[in-house]
Length: 590
Image (cartoon, rainbow, N blue to C red):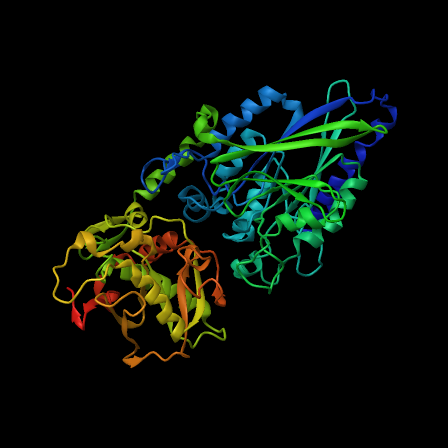
């Protein structure tokens, strides 16, 4: 966005807000106790889900909780709320992470990029049709670079907000900070709703290659303290913050940047905010109240899960006090989109681009020299899991070039997510890749010591039931000890080791070595790991507090697809490395 355009947008926001002040003096007083109700709806973390479709399974989306996904479902709920409440008394916002996450997004960023074709991005097309009033930038909006982001913003009819994303050169807002929407309530003084958009400071790390030297990402609380008084001064009766930040006050990147998940902090520390509509954490938060430490007022927070599985609906009651509207009541809930049919208008609108994406995911991306199966991956070192290790190791190694950690050995962690995954001999499709890596994890890398690595492996090895030397091996009873799922058994590449399952838990890791030499307790390693594990999923030791040295928020599944596409051939001779085995008293189990 040029500085001239940015200044024009900001000036426009002020002009629109100021332009709505004039009618107030002429409005007759309303009898005491009179009130009106307005409704605000919010989605977040749509991540490219336009329709209720699982591109990796080539079928309608379904999960164990029978959630549905997609803007077509959201649209039906929005239409229902508008009909119930009155369209003039409703607003619709989104809290970010819109243009990355599914093959639909990927296709129009990389395969047929909208920056080259001039086509309208499917998410812009759908959101425009639904009639969003404003959309806030998420961190994933920056994944495909600033030119694609700028093109999408230009295609959006709704303003795209990001008050704390500023020019690295001038310090001025790089995107529109806020808007003020005027709701013309029949027979009443208009209600003005101010909306401040805040994005995530982690963009500076996660998309460093795209934003370094161009954008800075400021503290959410400090930014809100700057803009909320401005919005109030311009006459806003209700002030909302749409924040792409979770509400736990923590950061995945330590203290080097402003707090990542600062939504509740904004509610607690910034006077004048009525509600925070947040995202980023992918949680279903129907309603949470936080007490503002300055005013003592209750601030409402809500988060509508992810992917269009939920829609937040916030109801405000406003009463006249001294001729001005004041919020006197507020409540919220999240609606499950599995209760709604897809809006046929959105389905029709998406058909062409959806069909193109379906064709893409069924495309062959590489030829496999032989069939590779994951069936034995829970108890044997298999080439198909080594393929994941290869991709993760290469990505992290390249990313660390030129950094202080570049000379450290890079190891990789992966779990046997699927026992049914197969790369067939011959053509391998995008969907085959997705069958191997079934979760939407992103890749990080942390720094661990040799002692920490051993602790980690000992914890992982509790997955196996203890089996005495010489006892029959029953595969059905070998794994999943104490109910440990397959996805919580991690295997490590880059080092060699044995797991002696005749030993009790905590004493099973034997012969842990790197390049033929025993790993020493103080030896340092970089370990590629997924975000679920690094954030504490599974309770593995050390990784949640270990220094993060890489976090570009690259989706591991997409990385596998891109690696296969680039190489064209899947040859286990180039990546298979049987570096671990199960033993009993030093004798291999298999």
